[in-house]
Image (cartoon, rainbow over all chains, first blue to last red; front, side, top):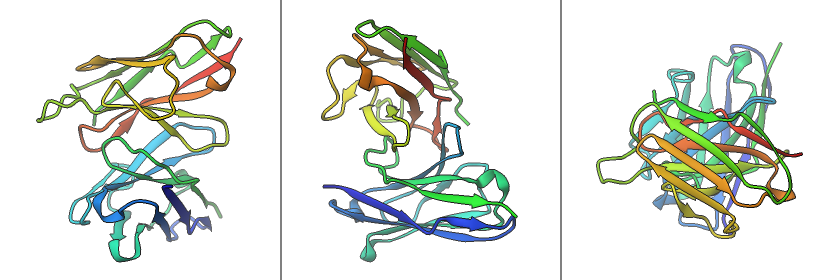
Length: 116
Length: 112
């Protein structure tokens, strides 16, 4: 069974930083591109970032480019999202998902709240 | 960026009646290999999204056959032939052809 477990969310002040993790199991992690998607409270889904199987290619939404960094450690079956210069509008549930063109499996998400 | 436009944004349907959701993209979703990366998701309240269809019309395992996906190029449709209570929630289309990926605004389906 595919499982994706996000962690690292929490309350952070504007301008602060957080690193999210997504630990994968139940599939061969290093053969899949991976995706981060977020959902602000009461809002729709917003694609955030994607990464290739090797980690050599990374992609970002304009809203996070230059502030967020996606990475992966295939030996640890873990996906990361480093978030800097956080803003109130980054407040959301952050989901990791398997695949980069048509994400199949999704985690339960981790809540990030940016507030003073 | 590719803009994905869904309509309607909300739908109130009688049990057993059909429902249809449109998704239009601002650019063709046909990639260099001839594939069309249009995906449909369903999200129930308080749950993570679940994929229903990939590449327009390929149904995921466990998705009832009352659901169907169709379309080409820039114009796509998700249909439910007979709505059941478990179909409530929000439906999203997403394009996976161009970077950055983009979602539609979502269509909220409720039972009348």
